[in-house]
Length: 333
Image (tube, rainbow, N blue to C red; front, top):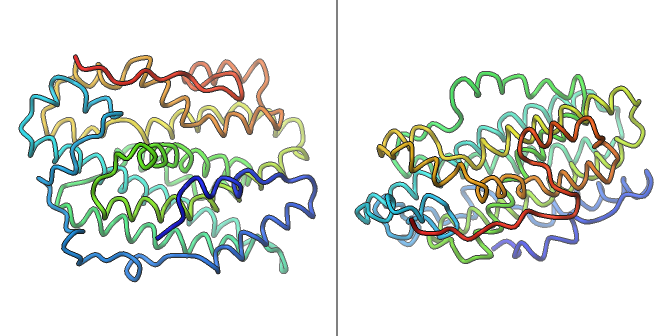
């Protein structure tokens, strides 16, 4: 089984002081991908009786920290409906995850295509692409086993997102902000879920632990790449990056954490229940906190200024660097 998430923290917090140390980080990440990796159909016991996906299994009931799970409407539903809503949430997160990683893989390959011979980033990008392929397979296999009509991203957004793989041809720095915008919010939720003991089904737990363990390397590379590149960017490009970053993060975090529209319609969840659960200060604080590490990184690199700070605030994801908004525990209504 993968290491516990807390054991991976040091890898993510390594510092890049100069090019030599940056290349040292890339070499260590390359070695780590060789030493420990997982395959979707070799390392997950899909046919184990304990891993069977039953949509009425009470282990899918929404955990306490999910705002919808603490509403009176949700708690008044029959147990099987509570379980089905919880499973739909899990499956949608995985479907969106594999769609995001599809965009990510294509962008990584576009980035690698232009790398000169001898660059260690080329090898790392191919390691990451391989790992993301296995993530996509395990996510889709899980979705298939739910036998639910899971769609993932809204169609309009999915169409717009097809531009993402071409971002590296314009700005590799912006592309790796996009990478963190997709990976950090879901990493935040998954770590919180595991730490709180909210994951009850062994299949979901196994997939989540594998994902967290390998995403720690992917997040680490993106962060160190930005630390290495941003200080040397021309001032005009830094200003553009500073303006675009909160837009990307504000949109991405909401895609990852918002309740899926098809689920709301399928279960006829009243609009006032959705507003009560997800459109309140506590839910907004969760979204802000989910991008806290990226916000801190941008502040550390001097990308945030008084002008683009207004954009962070407009998207509801601003907070003083190094702090997180307090999140009130869900209250029954």
